[in-house]
Amino acid sequence: MQKYSVNQHLIETILAWVNSGEIAIPEIQRPFVWDSSKVRDLMDSLYQGYPIGYIIAWRNPNVRLKDGSLSEGKKVLIDGQQRITALTAAVLGQYVVNKTYQRVKIKIAFNPIEERFEVQNPAILKDKVWLHDISEVINGSVLKIVREYLKLNPDADEELVEKTITKLINIPKKQIGLIELSPDLDIETVTEIFIRINSKGVVLSQADFVMSKIAADTENGGNELRKAIDYFCHLAIAPEFYKHIVDNDKEFAKTDFFLKMQWLKTENEDLYDPDYNDLIRVAFTSQFNRGRLSDLVSLLSGRNFETRTFEFEIAQQSFATLKKGVLNFTNETNFKRFLMIIKSAGFISPELIRSQNAINFAYIVYLKLKDLGVNSVAIESYVKRWFVYSVLTGRYSGSPESSFDYDIKQISQKPFNEYLREKEEGELSDAFWNASLPQSLDTSVASSPYFHVFLASQVKANDRGFLSRDVLVSDLISLRGDIHHLFPKDYLKKNGLDRSKYNQIANYVYMQSEINIKVGNKPPKDYFNLVISQLEENNQQVSGISTKEQLLDNLRMNCVPTEILEMEIDDYSEFLNLRRKLMATKIKEYYHSL
Image (cartoon, rainbow, N blue to C red; front, side, top):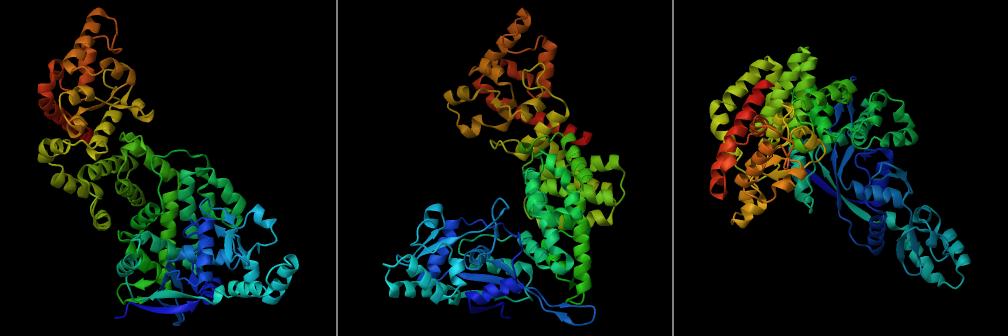
């Protein structure tokens, strides 16, 4: 089967299709990220007759309507949006939405004598040699424009001016290649084609397809839904963007979507800042009990999986269901309650959360169990356990879509506690806690998920920093405190150990900088002699700890073996093994307390 057709079209034809909606460019599918100089260079390439590459469109399938007739699908632009948007801005003089979501005009000037393009600026506006805005020229009369130009520049070569202005006005008559993908192709094939054609190898995510599909379906309110997704994600990061929406998108500001996300205008929490991919995935999986976004593209197209036809009612219902999922995701109570649960598990900083897929699925679990009417106390425990379980096992690091799909179907078919128990018995056995986890802690990667879970266990237990009497690990993490070495780094380096050895996570603790300075680069045996002597003399030379009991308690909560009191360089390997076992035991006890 031929997967695509390739044709050359006049630029004016492509732009006419954009204006009529035959080619759907979602209003804010992607803010226009080119700077003005790239628009200038594109116009120069067209003027010089250079090729500007192909654009790729995927025709939506024809959808069967209630009366039995077929609604012919629009072409959804999946590659080339920046070029087409640049053309609508420079040639048609239309507004674009820039990187900061402002509607702006990009004006390109042209010098007919030097045949040179430039971005319009105050100096050009004062210079009669320049045509200040090529969109006004291209959409005007050659004769009139040449006559007016020569009136302002009487010494100019009339023949040259007429020739160059005519060449400029004919830019829309230049051709551009359009690769049109067959509507019968599935999303995986379309993605593969895109990757192979795109010379830069830019991966177009399935969420990009979903966003295009949503925005192109104005009949089902897709343009509004698309904005809701995009605006929420932007507001979550930049609350000040609220005023911009109110001032510049008054129509959206009246919608139910906007009313329900107003709480973000004063929200500065950054523990979970979802992008559109995260929001779509959570909303879709929690509502449709499916994990593959390719299924969402099909459903939004109206695909009947049994008859393999496309029906308007299915598209309509799919949009309604997705809308519900988006509203659930963006609901203030849901969002804040979920973050409170994650924080109560000790994950108080985005630095401790490195798996976006793990937190996404934890939110899916929360929304799903809430929809199923599960007791709120049980939901809290289940969400915490599932999140930590998925981080410890790297559940969503390999093929997240397959795992999402499998897990949501299991959760939908059996009681959650039953499914969770199955996973724990299979993957969190004694062998995991006693052998696999200590082995996984044998790493020098500070961003290790196992180390993050260990730190979360310390936060939850209200543990104090190493050798601190009052300062908590949670304080040190929240205030961007430093991680220090139990066996000082300089001491280990001087003894010939390389980075992979001295930066072992089993050698890391959160410690106040002032205590770390007093510890210096001494071996543990020496700096602990100082600590013990301060206990005897009550001079608090190194830390605020004042009794032997306090010292031993501090070592215990930081999983530091007491053997360290007498350790030097030859004991370093034994120390690491001992501490890994203590850390693994603490993580196990923490997990079972959730």
